[in-house]
Amino acid sequence: MIGGLIRDTGRYLLAGASVAAILACSAPAAKATDVQQLEAAMRAMQAQMQELQRQVAEAKAAAAAAKSAAASGGGGDDLDLKVKWKGAPELSSKDGKFSAKVRGRFQTDYNAVDQDFSITGRPDVNAAEIRRARLGIEGVVFYTVEYKFEADFANDGVSVKDAYLEYTGLADGLGLRFGNFKTFNTLNDMTSSRFITMMERAALVEAWGFDRQIGAAAIFAKDHFSIAGGIFGPPASTDEVWEEDVKTGAARITLAPINRSVNGSNQVVHLGASWRYRENAEHLRAGSSGPFGAVSNPFADQLFRYRARGADFHLTDRFVSTPQIFDKDTFWGLEGAVIWGPWYAAGEYTQLKADIMQASFRPALGVPLQQGFLGSDPTYDGWYVEGGWFLTGESMTYKEGEFGRIKVKNPVIGGGKGGGWGAWQLVGRYDVLDLTDKALTIQGNPVINPPSSSAQNCTMCGEQKTWGIGINWWLNDYTRFQFNYNESDIDGGPLLFTNAAGQVVSANVNDGAKIRGFGMRAQVDW
Image 1 (cartoon, rainbow, N blue to C red):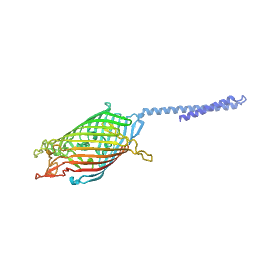
Image 2: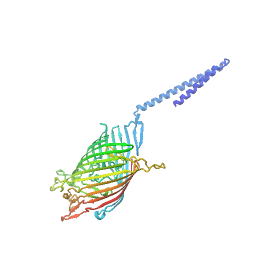
Image 3: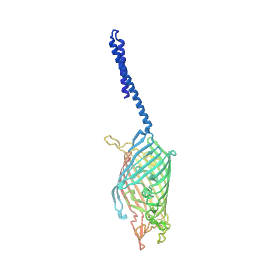
Image 4: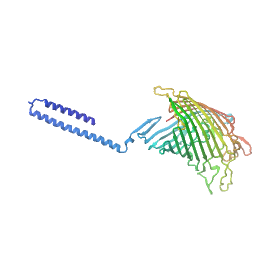
């Protein structure tokens, strides 16, 4: 508008100059009436130019007032919206004060597994499932408060996963986290399911019961070093069930003396250690009080047990297991990994010392004092080694003690736009879970461990040795297909029963069983 007014003003000025030139060149013989007419036309033109100048001034003033109002009205930079797309839209203010990103993952699996029915009595598996179907949001509020919330909707159930806020304003690299999140244990568990190289984690992760729990923690990560520690209560699924809930402390430290990129190829050496201590939850909220107050007894406590699925597939049965009779445990583990261009290797060794609940409990009225369980406190072991190679030249990525997202060099691109073959990776793993320590001394309680007429013994509790190979095909940074073939050899356990007559009765001891099968996963995340 302002530019148009200026152009009109210029045209009028040019016309005025032309008229003046004509007057200057006119002959003296011009009639007086003609001169008067020309003077009147010039006065009219001068009035029009003054009006146009007034309109231009008003337009400039209005534009300046609008700009000032926008700046002083609290909008300013907050009115500027930045949009990025990394698998999903991420919205943020220009100054970085606020941000929000939709996050999620979808994994659908197929398992076909021979469970060695002649020994185990368990039928074969030929089934598919929605392994994970998560949706959530993450972002930043006022620069220094980060948040994340994610729920899993797999298999017609809803469970809360990450749900926490983290304050990062105290010092560079330091975060104070509050909410529901993973305890800080093992490289294999801390690495997201989006980026683990086999379909499922090693058997020790399930056996030792690593999970998200409600707690508070401090996390420091800087350059090639990280340390994290926290105290935790219950998992979110049981936070209203117990009066005195699970009490957990956990910590992890990592060091990467080599962490660099050379000609686009990653080179990393990772070392780490972690620890966890747990005490069981006590006193069910419902029916836990009596004439002498809360009654502490094995029938109202949440006790621990240790077990894992055969062949490291999620749909198989468990063939090694302990009775559910432990009220405390202490875990520690050592970890290491190397990334060198397209190659990687990783391994962990862990031990868990479990305490059998043996203390007497206060009897309710008319109920005699009873003993908990029999047996010596065992120490169990679990370990694995794994490795892989990218045929297409990519590298595993690493950040703050975890493996991360693969950067595909030649992604598969649809829509008639060509593209490459994606990233292809060969992987393999060997893992061992040993639950045989002091097994002959362990005897469960016949009321807790059915059948009610017998006590439950752990002749060996079992040792499971699993090897597996796989192929990962990354179509792009956010989409992957996985193919695994795994086998487990079962030695011993898990359980024998002693019936009312004192006879030892076999209950699928599983000794010598071989569990083998094929798994496939289709995955997308954002």
